[in-house]
Each structure stands twice: as C-alpha cells, then as structure tokens.
Image (tube, rainbow, N blue to C red):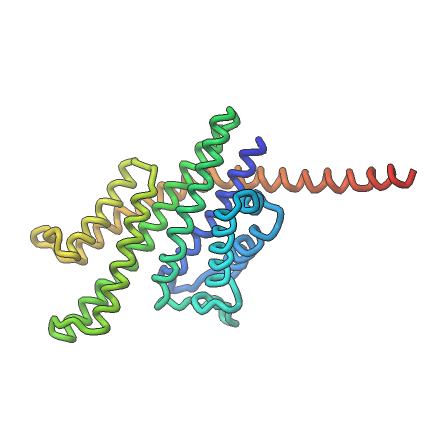
Length: 292
C-alpha cells in the first residue's frame, strides 16, 4: 500500500469512529456493545496522542491543526471519558442519556465534515502526484455514502421523536406555546440545521441517496407547514415512507462500505505490524554497531 494510501485509510478509520458515535442517538432495546464502545474510545482518545497520520497532520498545520486537536480532545471528553454525562459505563453495560441526543448531533456532524475535508485534501494530493490507488478512490466513495446514510437514519429518527413530543406538548397546552414546546422547537431547529449540513457536504448523487434525502426534507417541510401533507396521509405515513427509503440506502451503502473498508484496514494493520517488526530488528543491529 502506498504511503499516502496508508495515511488516508488511517484518517478514514478515525472518521468512522466519529460517525459511529451517532449510534448512541438510536433507541436500542438490547442496549449497546460495550466492547465496541471501548474500541471507539481507544481510537478517538489515543490516535491524537500517538505518532499517527492524524497527529502528524495536526502538528504540521499550525493554528488550524491546534484548533482541530482541541475539538477532538473535547469530543473525547464529552463522549468517551469517565466524566462524560452522555455515555457512561455501568455494571449492566452502557447507559446513554438520550435527553442529550442533540448534543451528540451538534458535536459529531460538524466534526465529521471537518475530518472529511482533511481526507479530501489528502486524496487530492495523491491524485496530483499520481499516487491515488483505485481501492482508495472506492473506499472514500463508499465511506462518504455510508456516513450520509447513518446521519440521515439517526437525524430522521430523532426529528420524528421530537416532532411527536412537540405535538403532545401543544395538545396539552391547547395550541399555546409553552416553555416545554419552545424547548422542543429549538431542538428541532438544531436538528434541521444538522440535516442541512449533511446535505451540503455530500458528494454522492446516486438515486438511493437522493430519494432518501428528498423524503426526509419533504417531511421536514410538511412539519414546518411549507408543504402540504399528501391527501389522505398522516405525518406518520410520511415518516414511515421516508424510513423505508432511508433503510434501503443504509443497507446498500453499509454493504459497499464493509466490502471496501475491511480489506483496506486489514492491509493497514499488516503494514503497521511489519513496520514495527522491521524497527525491532533494526534496533539490535544498531546496538551491535555501537558496541563494536
């Protein structure tokens, strides 16, 4: 694997851990996998401390690199530390405070977009220097699609839930705005902004993606009163139809992502292992030189 390819795979690996933090906004009746949480925690916290391509990039990019480093450290503290109030390890597994779902979205989506820009910079560099391998082109495209799918799935689910809460609050207050309904309205506005960020940063244009995206934005416009509900349909019908399109996009993009990501990551791990072994073999040789 080309050196620049190793760098890109390493950055995609980190960004996938950030993406997968969105799973903690989902309602999982069987709970969350503690081992996978530990895996993510280890990567998110340590990749910026060890001599990794991400740390090298941060070190080489002055103030901007320092700003991004602080954001990544804050992200680790907020969601992957013992002081996190959002995700906590307990004797019975992981406890997630879903009342803070919006905080996960507000932190994860802009951060993922920023890291995606870093990946695109490296891809452009590799292209300009004729070092861009086909497998990297495919990996980055598959990673892009799967991220948009996960983001649409998580955001759409949260918007549906919050909208139901908003309607309940308005029914209870007989249509009058209350502190509770205003609070939910603010959350909904934040979620719609996150959705706009996901759309704005996307490079995929395929039909499965655009169908899912349009369905979500149409449902948002109906909630805002900017678009009429289709005749004879309820909001729940509209949400269900959007969810079917999102599910189709998730299934397709996840398969594609795994097919491209797994071999690249395995190759990266093997390359790193080989480099470590070579370094260990070289060390005794250097010592022998010095003692002669």
